[in-house]
Amino acid sequence: MYQAIEDNLKGMEIGILVNNVGMLVFFNPTRFLDMPNIDKAIMDTISCNMLSLVQMTRIVLPQMVERKKGLVINLSSEAGSRPYPMGILYSSSKGFVDFFSRGLHAEYKSLGITVQCVMPLFVSTDMTQNMKTNIFVKSANDYARDALNTVGYTNRTSGCLSHALQSYALDLLLPGPVFEFLFSLKILANFFKRPQKKDEKNKKK
Image (cartoon, rainbow, N blue to C red; front, side, top):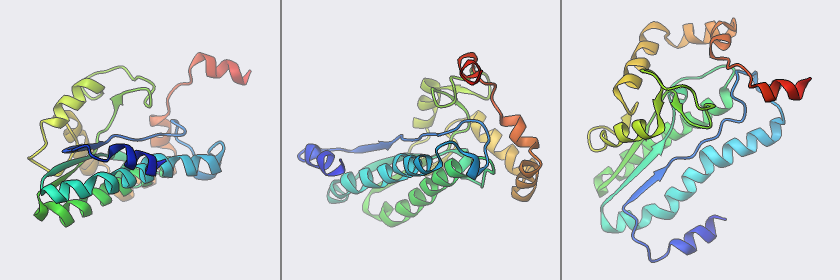
């Protein structure tokens, strides 16, 4: 698949690459071994959240290096900033995006390439079951506009002010060990649990 993409992109000048890929195989908090279709979940998550991003970067980056100019924006997640028990597959894959982006930026910034990692919290999309927007949950359009305004100012961002404040509050009030402990007691797991849709409930009847 990636060879075909590479062939089709030959001759095209690409100045900006946005790796906005991500899938969450099971939204509600779930222990690793309790995930439905775990083998497929593992491969799908790695292929979508990690492999595609690395491959697209490999395909596009050489021409940016040749021109000594380019921008790569990788979409990670706040979930990638720390281990998220009951969601470790997604969290770990997004942590990879964060580390890959930071390392890539360090390697290529002297060659005129900017690599930015964007780490949102909740954005109203299909993946988050189109959560109702509010001061904490941004619409996709509003979030994208705010995040683009951070380009050139930082190579690692929450994307908007409200998400930056939420991230800061999480770090301040729930440092790593406390966060993981509360998840082990299922306190936070129950907090993050989303109600099932009616059609999903009916399927189980």
